[in-house]
Length: 107
Image 1 (tube, one colour):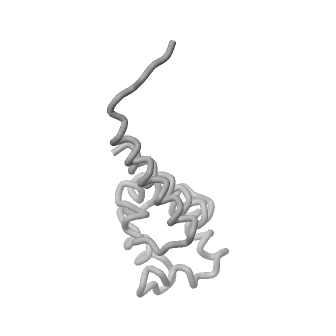
Image 2 (cartoon, one colour; image 1 turned 90 degrees about the horizontal axis):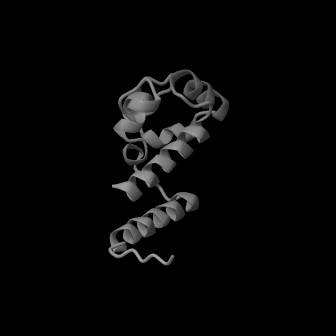
């Protein structure tokens, strides 16, 4: 049985935007932390309501949210494991990126 489905242009546009976003993330393009770590993501996976709160409550002075990149990875992983559903900073970033991309496709 052959099926043709019409009206998929909107879905195609969303998938193309999501693929563009994947490319940006893989290339290391700077992203807004509040966009990547959305309030729903932080509510669902951490003890915090925002990424700003995650940074403010950390044991380090993070004047600029990009300062988190200067924290020794082992210490950051310990903080993430203690305050989130993740075992590592890399795991938290990866899950946030996946959820952002899925949200782009389904919304």
